[in-house]
Length: 186
View (cartoon, rainbow, N blue to C red):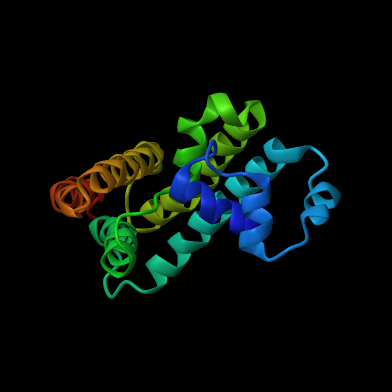
C-alpha cells in the first residue's frame, strides 16, 4: 500500500490520491488501510514519502556501482538518466513523490512535510558520500549534493510541463563540468 501510494502521488499529487484509490491500486481490502494506517491519509502519505527517500538513497549506490569511471558528472548523469529513461518508456506522466508531497503540503499536513525533509536528507547523504569518495572535499560535497538534487527536481518539473526531456538533458550537460571541477587533484 505504501508503494501504491507513492506511485499515485507521483502521478497526481497528494490531493488527487484518495485512500480508496490506494487500496484499489494495491489490490488490498479497504479495511486494511484503517488497520495499517490508523492515522489515515496523512500517515500513509508520510510513509510513502519516507519510502521514496529510502528508494532514492539506494539508487545512488547502484548508480555508483554501475559507473565505469566514478566521477561526479557520471553520477549526476546516471541520476538524470533514470528520469529520461522513464520518460522514454512511459511518457512524462510521473514525477518524484517527495516533491509532489511538498507541493501539496497544505493538503498533506505537517507529517508529510517532515517526511519529505527527511526523505531529501536520506537521498542527499549517499550522494554526498559518493562525491567525497570521488575526491570532492567533504566541506563541498553536501552543497553539491543539494545542487544535484535541486537540479534534477527542477528539471523534472520542467520536463513534465514540456512533455520533453530537454531540461533534464541540459542540466546534466551543463552541471557535469562544474561537478568534475570540484574534485581535488591528488
